[in-house]
Length: 584
Image (cartoon, rainbow, N blue to C red; front, side, top):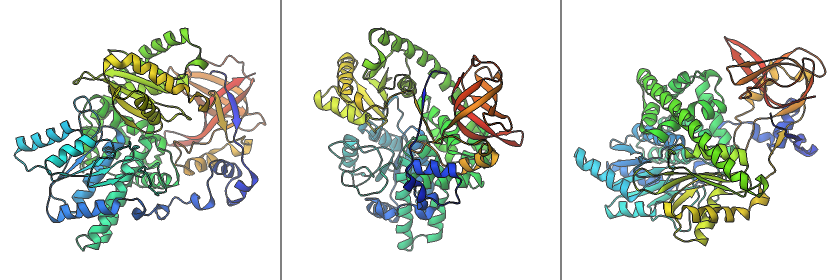
């Protein structure tokens, strides 16, 4: 592994004092370093920010309740990633349970329509209704999109269709003229969780709708609560998948969703996805959702049609869900192969750039290859970003309109959407369309403008390089004593989550004696170690480290590691997941 610097998180004594003494000392350190208070140790649903505190939920609920009363047709317009898929499935689940008899969903084909509620998508929806000889929708509700859909909302209005926007992406200077907008990131919003994912916003709106219908005597209040609570598995999946920061409100949502999954109170589709991924839902963690389940949903949106993912999540039949989960797994394998090929190409691009520029002089990178697939460029941008520690945009050619479709990924210290807004302000008309948030964004660009955009993007990024934290640092939560490294504490660490974006799983450091090592699965390094202070040997794994460590048995090694639970053939044991190892 490459040389890195281990830096221990600093924790003030007063931060430790606000946490109960009943917590193990290392966990108190971990929570204190993340600013957790004693009250935030309890992730019960009662700790969730009130539904009414998210502006727009009441108005959205009133308009939806009116649609139910008038038996209007409602169209849910989703997005083609896991956040959008879970949000669409959540809204459809609730509308059906709440007595909406004419609700349907539509997700834009990313290759034909691109992202969000566009005029072309509105026209396509109306054309489909005409072909099916069904009435046109009278109300559209967007999930995980819509905040930048001014022209799409206007086209819907031309046909007499109201639009409710539920979104979490950052708004531009001009808002769509929708009937209602629910977005925690609207200017002036006082909602306490700006990090709510698209599925989280949808959950709040459906909870408000349940309350509205119960208040009107149209729905039993207990049914409304049970329906929304049963959707927390979707909320957890979409929230983790979208990599939004796990502030306390999001931790409550994810913790409650994971609790339902572990207890067996989850939908057949999620159970089927766990089975397809070879994961045990009874031991589900946020990492399972982020690294095993979400990629299967995302693969459908990247390569084919996310509808198969939504139908999997909506299915009531275990056999049907299993068949769709198998399809999603096949698509995910295809996505992996395609990504690996594109990533190798991208590495060549970067090598060429670095021949001319030193790493510390590179403010950002813009990559394009006409052979790349637009559904996978975001993954490529993310991998290259990790290598460079700089904002990266990867482009592919759109399949229908000839525009380049770019997907950007950023690093701490540089806000990707704001960076694009800066370019747009300096060069009006250069970018055809853009949107997103701090760490990820998408854009469309005429191919003739690519070189000019590359220069403008790098120039804009140069003003933010100083804000990027130094690469190569591993933040540690300190050292564990020999008697603390065991199954009991590993179980406590797992239960103390959910861990994720903005609330990182703890990494510890310390010195260990190397007892044995071997390569397993052709690309992982399995180690047997013993704490420098002695004690029982412990197994460790360094994933994607295909070379043995150049050290003899008995060498002392400096480790940065996560303490995890290894489950094999019904046996549970502690395991160190190595983030960095250096032997002397």
